[in-house]
Image: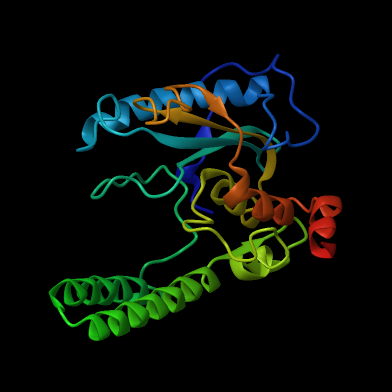
Length: 251
């Protein structure tokens, strides 16, 4: 386990109630222990982002998450990360990273995206309608194949140690196929790290950091439930919410 990813509480939490079970990631209730963790993580973000080329105070905001965990010695700490990718060129060695490694398959995703960009440029230069239609269809098929291969590269583990790919998990969901960027939200990344490193999940929360979102539904520093479209099937599987997961399988 990379211990540098674990934050120790700076706040005295000796009198803070510790939840017996992980809170509902899709609920609005935020356990006090995770509020404290989020506040400390926000303080870390405020300092760390001063070294980045991206200023969350004036540029697009982003969802972040924290997961309070119980360590093997029964003490408590927390993990933190961003939903999705950090702005280009920004890295942080204290964030739980993506489940997907860009170098997998000889960088197939980077090569595939480059090829799609080149095909897009070729389409713009084409004046023959028939040729343009054929190129668009070829690009669409390549995009679908690339997306499918990407989703097959994401593997999530549940509390029993079973592993399934994104495609397997979403097979029985209302979507049928994972929405774009599935698996990159904060909640599944944090839980995956905790489960695979023998850390007991205690409390989970996500918050918006930065300027208000365009549709005004996300405000700086406010807490929000995990997203349902991308995260519900994944978290139901990971947390073995068998009633909900089996219900989806039978639908």
